[in-house]
Length: 414
Image (cartoon, rainbow, N blue to C red; front, side):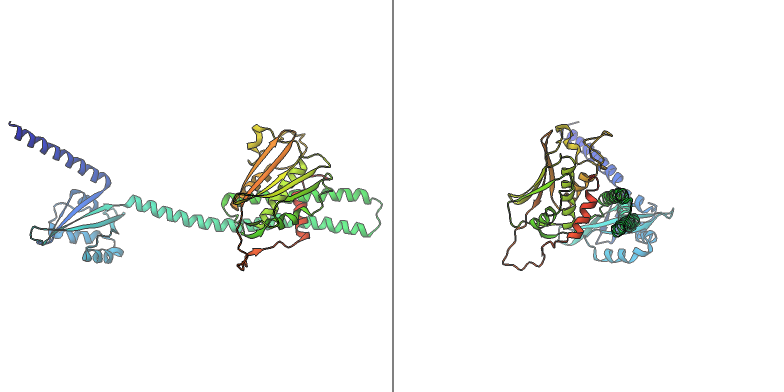
């Protein structure tokens, strides 16, 4: 065999090998190729086309279109006819029914028209691919999304119901205690001091139970994504002033030193969440500090953010335990003789609420030197020349903040 003959044979074998690879790849991907001769109106198919449509190869090419229409899903025949007529290059989908009554999803696409040497349309080539697995996965995803939306609606109803069912009896108990206290103050009672002591214990236990219920419900709402903040523009100085003017002296004779470096600090936040966060940090500072101390609250700008720092003079946190303070159900003091009560989820909720509003929280601490919790929130640049109706000022609702304090500080025994 001469050199040219050997080269031709190698090229032929190479082409045959490539053709087998392409054919195998198309079989795996379930892709068929069709060719439409525009001059003679003849259609030819690749082997995979026959397999996809479950059509016997013995049928004549003239009957292929008739056989295709037999397996097209009745609801998709009009789509198929319309697309076939306009020979669109845009992929379109339809369904076919196999002999075992199973439904399969097909995607078809036509290519460019091929012209002959005289510039006349010669033939059109296109592809057909079975996409049943992809389509079923897509439909399953849609069904899962719809199911999740239904579940979220059910959870919303559940949380609303559970909040009412849990809190109502506790509130009734608190109201009863308060009425009993009022009654005792209006009548003479020989055991007044003893009864008052028991009522105080009942009231504090009820508040602790309400705080625990609130925390557990909030944890569940955060986990399910049901907890959504009511974000508005607030002056953070007003929010903090509303809190620090309260009477903290009864809690271990503590005082609050509020040190704002700004007269106005506009932040996008949920006011109730911020009050909850600050009360939690202050109550922790009081719990872990000695008597007659001052809790320092600093408020200052840093670049385009507002920093809020709550510092105590308490026991501090060891370096290897600082990463635990924001984890649920973890407490730095885990012994039965720890000085403070608590469930170990307050700071975890504080961190989650801060992040829901687009902020972050961190802690600095040294054993025996106290701890400082620092919240970072984005500052709002407010144009005073613009009438911003969303800008909100906090109204000094004394009764509401006292109730929140009583609940949040219920772990601190007076």
